[in-house]
Image 1 (cartoon, helix red, strand yellow):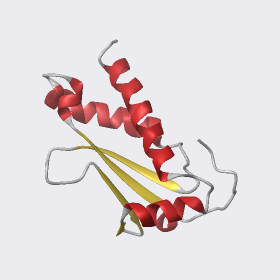
Image 2 (cartoon, one colour):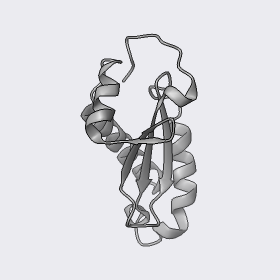
Image 3 (cartoon, rainbow, N blue to C red):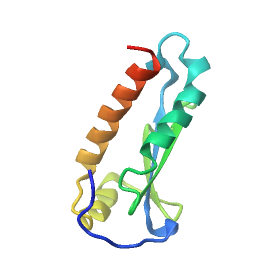
Image 4 (cartoon, rainbow, N blue to C red):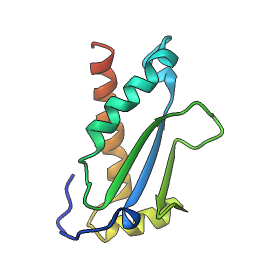
Length: 114
């Protein structure tokens, strides 16, 4: 997934996608593995759409926090506003989320040795 538009944005103008990963997705010992897994996943995502997006892959230790949060300049955006932002770059939020889940599924399998 790459953007067709080439604009240089400062970090405060990029869409930050915070994705919180449940420890249980890594199996019964997921609590012990989640921090290391998130660090690995973070490195994998850093270059994806990096011209207009910033990723924060983090463990979801607090079930009250949503799985995904979108922000620009530390201001929360709802799904619709995040979608409108991505439309500028000819991207769909649904496609971005689908790609995220697919890539994480592959990374989980690799991490667990499948």
